[in-house]
Amino acid sequence: MKQNKESIISYELQYSKLTKKKIIQYLTLFVMFLILLYYLSANLVVAINNKEQYNSESIRFEGNGITQKKIEDSLNMERDKKTKTIPQITAYNRIDSEKIENDKLVRNMDLSVMIVSGDMSVTTPMDLLAGNYVYKEDTYGCLIDSKSAYQLFGTINAVGSIVTYHKQQYYIRGVVSTDSPVFFIQSNKEDMEYKNLEIVYPGQRNAEELVEQFLTSNQYPSHTLIDGVFYGGMIHSLLLLPIWLFYMIVTIKIGLYYKSKISNEVVNSRLYKSDNTKDYKKGNLIGIILIAILYISMIILCGYSIHKLTGNPFRFMMKYIPTKWSDFDFWPEHYKLITDQLNLIKYRMPNPKDDRLVELLTLGLHRFAIINLFYIIILIYSQLLKHARIKRQES
Image 1 (cartoon, rainbow, N blue to C red):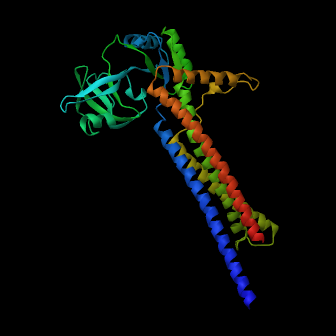
Image 2 (image 1 turned 90 degrees about the horizontal axis):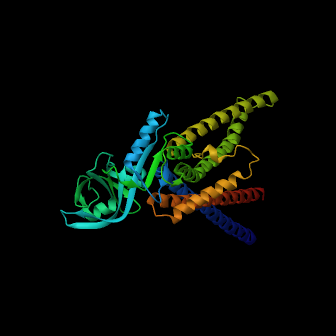
């Protein structure tokens, strides 16, 4: 009797230890899964926020710049030639530090000033918090970042307020969120030389080639071209591919689960429970059809939702795919071209948009590597748990 009690107690202790071990194991898996979801969510937020920011080709002039009159003349020439697609061009200069004043509250601060001719939204990574961007003809309006608005007015709700820059008053049309303090105005000088251009060819995949043709045919000064469409697509893909991979893994897992579940239920149901091989095959066929309908519906619905939310993750242009499989120099040449352009961004005059581009590429590569490492760890760990469970059941 005493031995039976001791064996029962020993069994209960072993069972208790086993239960605690299982709880710790599955809790560890759950925590890893939460970390993965956090990174995926963060990727989604960054991808959505930067989806439209890098859809232009950036031109940086080191020597002579370009005037608004020259830009207008070249666009008119393109129209006269009846070119199918006319580019949208925004020109701007950045001045590192200028005094912006609030005369009413006797406050002032030094800000980077962006003098723009065109669409302000493409000049710097930013989110509009209140009001509107200043349109091209509005030379009395300005745009300011939220932190500067708070320091000058004590609130970020500064739309409609007045600031003074170079003894001229400007009405705040909008407040934006940016990485660094900045003040935007539209230029009213046709003879001003601009050092930066953002050129957009809407819906054109070969935008870089079209921009080079446009600049060459219109005799623009020597320049550095930063292929924002390509780099924007690369960032977009690096951030979104892990999300699509997660979606694929989940759909495959669910599909495999329902495959066995529905097949067993259909085959073992009263309607098809029979020793007859024909009935068995018929039941199994219906199970497969039901699985296929469920699986395809789930893939289409979830895939469509993710695509609508994030857009197409495969935005790489065709020019980065070799035309011949035997073109072994293709990738080394393009890799050198990309690294040369990135080095030019790093070591030339600082530009917030270019600096942010390099940061996003680094961020995208790091997160892509981390998330895929998590996938591998989680899959290996879950397989180990599965084998351990099977061994316990066999014993």
